Amino acid sequence: MADLQFWPIGADVSVRDAFGRVLVHMANVRKDWVLLDADVAGGTGAKPLVGAYPDRVVQFGIAEQNMMAAAGGMADTGLIPVVSTFAAFGCMRAHEQFRTAIAYPNRNVKLCCSHIGLDVGPDGATAQMLEDLATMRAIPGVTVISPADANEFMQAFQAILEHEGPVYMRIGRSPTPVVTEADAPFKIGKAKRLREGTDVTLVGTGVAVARALKAADMLAGEGISARVVNMASIKPIDADELVAAATETGGIVTAEDHNVFGGLGSAVAECLAERHPARMRFVAVRDRFGKSGEHTNLPAAFGIAVEDIAAAARALVKG
View (cartoon, helix red, strand yellow):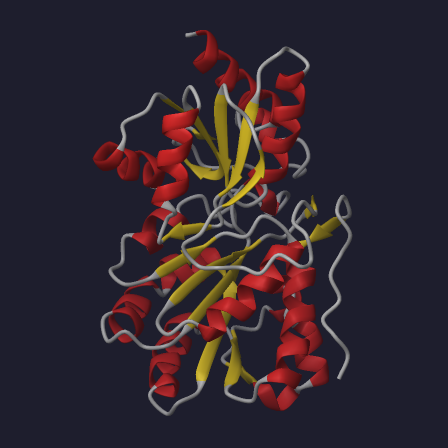
């Protein structure tokens, strides 16, 4: 059996490419899980598994609510259902079924959804799920994961299969720079400090992590020392890392491809409000629906680009 192949730092890779690769690999490694698909394997990145192991895929067609309810029943047999669809359908259309048939009875189901945030690009507002972190982390007992890149996604997928209980994990669609090492195991509930800094901390999740690193480079040229933290585990969140940032640096800027309400910024603020209040700025979509456009252009149009992260940090340090 071939080892799982990771990508080099700096490569531009779509997380959905990582989804297909890790699915095929884990089909060799473990026999206790099955993929549930809603006729979108080409869009989510799951198609390699459909071709290599068709007997490990259960096709539901465009019937996401039925698929979610069936996943709950399958979990009771000892199988681990990995449910895959677009986030607009998995987090919204089938939200009640996920909540009632999976989360409420604490069934061991993993929901992996693509088409999240402005990262979706040309598909436009109806497919650009900017509310998923808010809707999913509000459900009791659900673990919520947002990997930074393809390498971290493959590590996280293995971790969520080991984890007992319902999980929601994001799958990015567009190419994004690889910023995490291949030999960095993923631990649910733990953040990764990617860069040291003393003046401000940039806490990013998903595609915003690479942008935060670029923003830190920009700020360094201005004499501002920015720490960068990759917060892939939204729930549970790493309170110790956040308290350290609040204590040791001048404030925290959160960065995410999500609505400003209910996402990473809200989770960080909730955590620190109870443990160590800190000065904060939030780089997120400001309560708007997305629109069709290239994934390379939309961040600037919606205020979540590298320059916006740097500007928020600059204002925090100087304010």
